[in-house]
Length: 399
Image (cartoon, rainbow, N blue to C red; front, side):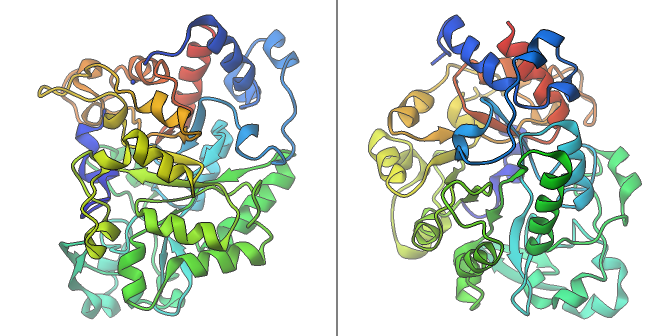
């Protein structure tokens, strides 16, 4: 992801060959019915056509298209990467929950935090006993000051509580500051099983391995730890309801030798270089990876890509959408699915075409943005607001 996770550093710049007419939309209409018709309030006719989805035997193909993925849970409404955010995403009807940006603790456990630096997502600064842990490190080439998960044991991290990461955009989320602790990956897997039993249909999750090269240098390799936990819980098979993702292609290649789960390579800006490429001296950029040759290579070890929305429809200098690239077509020809990131309701995160006013926490015309991106033929999208995404999908497939 370059030097930092572009889901945040490029949020305000995130922004597709149009989908083929009524035939594709009819197919999409059938698929969407599997995604929570009751929550959406679909018509009786639509619900009657709904096929039960009680298992993941069909793997990725069992998911509705376009798939609505709760980004870090329902993080538009609750502090991200908490069981509260994950639970709300499911309650809203999300098809998949991005439960877990995985980072390690000092004693080798995997926990769910967006970044290893936790000063902005927990109340660690309010704990005087941890004041001496504040430090400056170089993370993927960038100097970062704060508190880092790898300097804490799991027991110590469990004393902290999650807080809203972007309070200027989401002041309403601060109501929930301090309510939830930091979940472990194992706790998420147990939660997934509990929710699957209670709901009578398979719950899917979509964890991301964060900064794998950085952690491998610290002796805290992520891939082996993730594989071990998945094997322990019987979730390391081809059709397991756990999709694994990373911004580092070599991490996905390593995972491909350890587990049979669906794998996705995340892609940031076209001119950026994955950090594992920087470390190894590989000169390629994301622009090279999204060529037909690059996509064929990715397809040799992964099932999908997670591009920034700007790789699907670029923006001009004023932040407005331009013409879609050929990425959707080219990826599909290579046999890859596309789950771009991230759609959010608030003005600053939308293309300029869809903003309304200048209030940083006011909603823009996000439904218009969804229409533009869905029309390119993407297979799904990460969203902080799953309920909005589901309504947008309903509009799209019934248009």
